[in-house]
Image 1 (cartoon, rainbow, N blue to C red):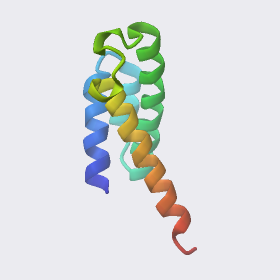
Image 2: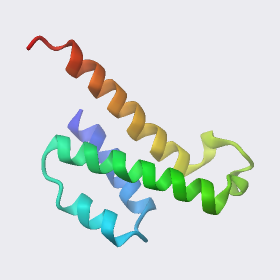
Image 3: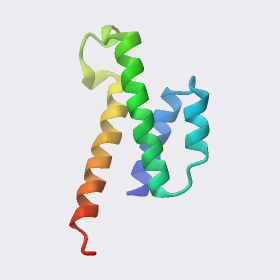
Length: 91
């Protein structure tokens, strides 16, 4: 699971190279939970910037072919899976 998260993290980091603050936050993240929290925060930032600046015109309204949309979706799906696994584990 960690390797999958690191792949998504790297995909998002490369897409968002313009935002220095977010990149510093990601660079300081060491634990699984810190990386996941940073990736989720970045996914939210990317989604907002993507909708405002690009308005999906660059990929013909097809989120399946857009690297921004794919990165956002991957992180959110990973988080949902991790949350599901966490809540099903015995305490």
